[in-house]
Each structure stands twice: as structure tokens, then as C-alpha cells.
Amino acid sequence: MTNYQGAVAWITERGLARDRAYAVEAANTHVLALGRHDPSFGDAMRKFDLICPDGMPLIWTVNAQLPEEEKLTDRVYGPNLMLHVLKATEGALGQSHFFLGGQQSTLDKLSKRFEANEIAGIYSPPFGDWPKDEHKKIVELIRDSGAKYVWVGLGCPKQETWIARHLDDLPPAVYFGIGAAFAFHAGEVKQAPALFQKTGMEWLFRLLAEPRRLWKRYAVYNSLFLYYTIKDKLLS
Image (tube, rainbow, N blue to C red; front, side, top):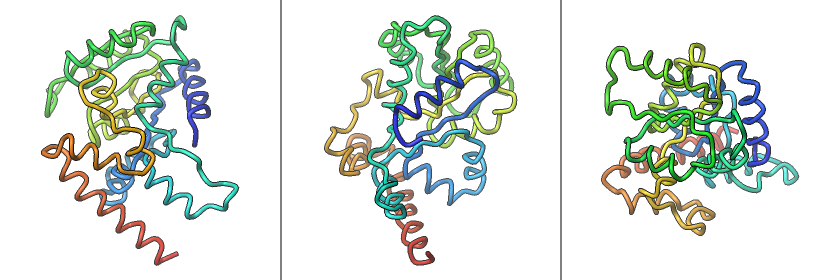
């Protein structure tokens, strides 16, 4: 889906059906480059049911290959997609959500911010490697909650890998790899201003805000994205 309206319609239809586990991702250049650089991560992403184009550089790259009438007009930004889905299900009986990942304090803030929604459960798993029975515990929590939408904020690539690896045994719901959206919506990390987002410079804003944590990601994967883009252009 290439716009919020289409993505939300697709997601809520699957959420209401609750016939199996569905995987959704808003993929930016980091996800795309990692998927090509790491075959195992690429295999994981191919198990996702819906991948939306996130990131203006990705939009520009796709548009360069499309005729004028088919060009994308905007991205589907993951944190905003989360807001759109929450808004669409606000106050709806049985349209419940589960927040998985992040610190307990972050999840508490999210629960308070989205209290108009039905929050079926929240869970902050251990940092780093999980205990042997952790996956089973999480599956039972989600199943018992009856949630239709499960927001997974474990960080990329852990969240995508976990969803893909266990898609066949996860309780029926729509699962989202949501990354930094938890911190954004909890008010713990500031989002880039609209100008940075529109001009494809959101990565620079985030790098300046969190240089120690993000410098390697952007140095490596922005370069890889540029390399693959040039390579594809030369070989086309």
C-alpha cells in the first residue's frame, strides 16, 4: 500500500478477521539495505504480508523507475501509520492493541497517551538475549489478551526477525515492526521537523540527536543503500 488510507484499510480488515498472524512493516532505506546485505534478514522480510514505503530517499528511488502517472506522492511513515491505525480503532469495542518492547516506563506513557483505545496488554521483555522460555511467555500473553494489533518495538532487525521467525505460531493478530515509534509517541525522543522529513534528511536530525547510538547505522546502511541504488542503475 502506498498511502495511509489504503494501508489502514488493509490492516483493520485483517485485524477484524483475526484469522491468522499478519506481518506489517514500514520499510526505510536501513531496512532495504540490510535486507540486501544480509540474506537471512532478506528472507525474513519476504515473509511479511504488507511492506509500506517509508523514507523519502526510498520514494525517490522507486519513482525514478515508474512512469509519471504511477509515481508515489508520499511515504507511509511508520510512526504516523501507528497513529492512523490507533485513531481508526479508537473507542471501537474489541479493536484492542498490545504494546511489546521498550522499557516499562515507556509503555506506561503509551498506555496513558492512547487511553481512548482499548489496550489489551503491554509487556517489556528483558534487554539483550532472552531467557529460553521468553518467547513462549510472550505468545501466551498476547493470546490471553485477545489483541488484534500487536506493536513490536524491539529495534531493527530484532523485531522483524522475531516476527518472521514465529509468524506461523503467533496468535492471530496484525503484527507491526515499529522501531522508534514507541519512544517518539511516549515523548522520550523528539521527531524530526517536517522540513527534515520532506527533504529526506530525517536521518541527519536523528544522528545529531543520538550520535553515539546511530552513527554506525547511518554510516554503513546509508552507504549501502547508495551503493545498491547506483549498482542497480548501472545494470538496468
